[in-house]
Image 1 (cartoon, one colour):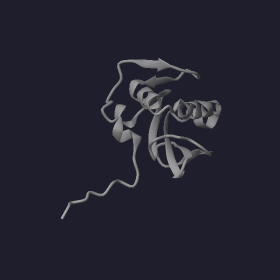
Image 2: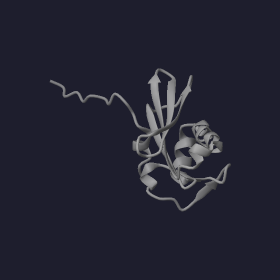
Image 3: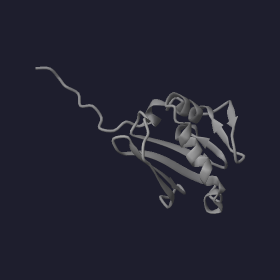
Image 4: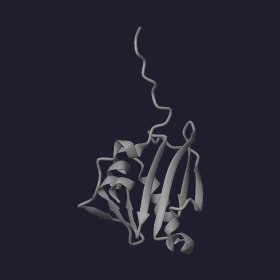
Length: 124
């Protein structure tokens, strides 16, 4: 009898980019923010710089910009629909945005914005 392994029901982009544990190079972006190599690699590989645009677009809000530690999570709702949720790192929701369509290849991804540097959690 063949041993079948069960495939995971969700895929996390962070698992695929966990080899990034620091950054020697930073990319400058709008609103005086920097992007680490890992976050840049994730957005390049997944063709998802729009996720970075979502994060940066909310930095004009004083309430959100006042948070020095932000957790941004992209989660598949169903099919090609996603939600982006930002928290303060203590599960207090700052903002949620629906993404009506994306071809993002994973079910979830998390980026942190720490003191105006956007990074993968593994790079913290």
